[in-house]
Image: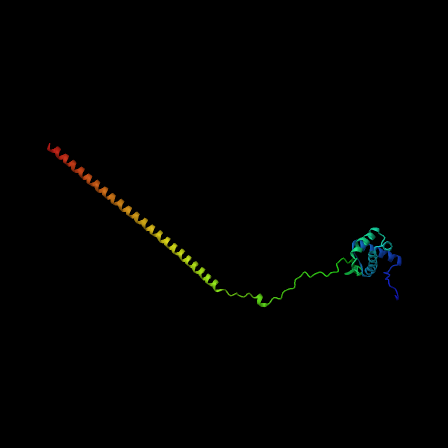
Length: 228
């Protein structure tokens, strides 16, 4: 039975236990956190809180008391210069224990012991409250179109139709003009061919007349020769 026993022996003798806790507190103050089992973490937290309370006094006697547990001068100076000022506005609760699960091998519950460096003020919530979305806002509804807008839309539609009709008419006119030009070219070609044929007939008639005249002159010449 453990009547009136405040300390946990941790399965070792007194000298061994004090040296172990001193080394663990030294590592905690040097690095800010350590990993150990839950029973040891609870004992380390008790000793570390006492060391921080001594650092807040900032006197020679307090330094000597801290040095009796922490046998490293650099860690003692860091305790009184940094951690003492860090926890000047905090009354207790300088360390935190966070359990991280059982250890592989013997299934001992492991934990992280760390110094609390968070501010005492509650942080403001960063997330904005979500707005309640109604079904009417989700379903898009057609907004009423003003009368002026309807009239302007009708005018634009009519102008677009007129432009399309004028373009179609211009295309039809261009096609008719091309057809007319083609028929005119054909007619000119036919007239030219007729004129050529007529000129050829006239030249042939002239040639025939000239030949007849030559024949008549030759006959006359022959008659005159016979008369002589």
